[in-house]
Image (cartoon, rainbow, N blue to C red; front, side, top):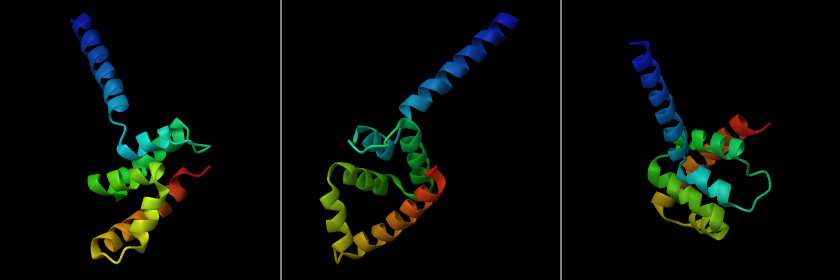
Length: 104
């Protein structure tokens, strides 16, 4: 019986570890791939955690694209489109929250 419980516990722990690795979101992945200094796993993970709370999936994908193409952020910010304006308001909130939560 104890071997079964130990095996089940080990299996659960393994699944949790694999889920943590597989669960990296679009912002964390973009952050890790960026050439910016300070883009370490801990910081990128923190930023992703804030994004998970403040941004939906499509917002996260758009925000992640800014790492590779910063001019895209400027285009969205300057857009006269209502949808872009609403995204930008959410993005600013995300940035403020990430700065408070993730700065050392």
